Amino acid sequence: MTLGGPAGASSTMATYMVDQGVNSLRLGYATSVAVILFSICFVFSILYQIFVLRRDVAGGTSRMAG
Image (cartoon, rainbow, N blue to C red; front, side, top):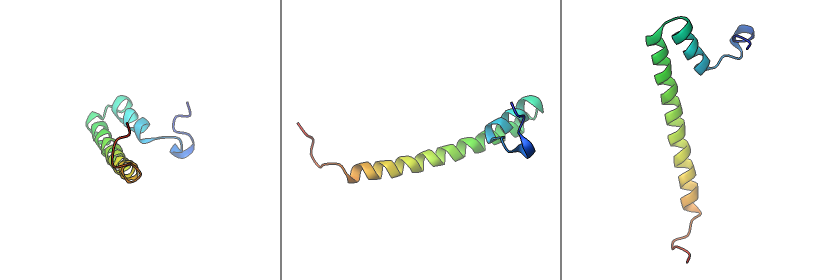
């Protein structure tokens, strides 16, 4: 809606990727941006899962309730 806002303030990496791929027809560059975005999300999610699993295992019990 704001087309990037003042000086690109509302532009995100995903909207930048779409802009480069669709509007500028720089498909290889947009693919590179997509791979970088995927890598950042993947690393973040792995680190988050490690943190959450460590916290859940530390507070768990040693035998099943039943």
